[in-house]
Length: 361
Image (cartoon, rainbow, N blue to C red):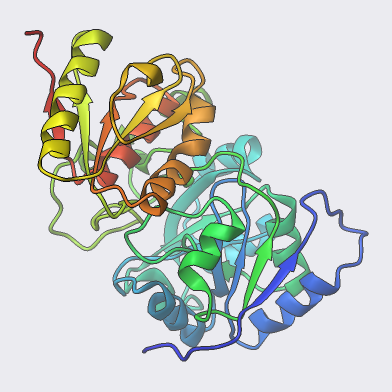
């Protein structure tokens, strides 16, 4: 299914909206969803591209607008825990424990699906990914529309995910019915995804909610090997597992080394080589190191110690390199535990797993 060029509506909804507050904008968005149309909306993670999760045609429109492979499953967003039983079955006790702590919030769980969920929403799988967003605009859109919303990130497939309405406009203007501007996204990277269908829960995609946080609630969990970059030939069970994601237009490399000075020297040497060849070169750097780089464009992603700042700025920074016409990007490594695992997961995918080890020479 392709998409027909359309006039996309742009509206603004205050992120502090409450249940009692009237909103003509959310009323209009609700009607679009009920009629099988598509609405982009903010969440606490990234902007989502939403359609009625139980309408097969709406799900196919999402794939078409994004240029997304149809075997890449969509996440169903709900606003009432009671709706979970309508679309999922065999829900383990551990899942309810996680819901008590992390819902609403940036956690997606995978369950065996009920027959009511169309295959087009689940990428042909017999499982369904579900989450309850904590962003007020997302929550109120779901609640007021009465529609469970299937929503991947609101970007062209493979590009950096959008964390502002302007990013959505770059990719989706003319392809969808409405874009809701609800401000910038807090976390800036997609939700943690955990598969609850096996004997041991398995993290399929890292996010703000870390392995350590999950294990504090339900005990030991496993990590899917795809997170470490091992190739996958099987159909992806969750978004972001199989296909190239988050990539800027320029060719990107991550540079690792035993010391900061070693990394800086290595990056500057490669920058100069690219510049001599006539290329425009960018560096993604932490604030403390930024002045040491000799690239055409240096973008500060945040403070090394502030992982939330780094995650919230990541996709914005990659899109800024695109806007500045950079041919090559060299990034410092942000490897670490906790949220650092999620940041590196996104960076590795953005770089196509191109990692350079800086030698201390």
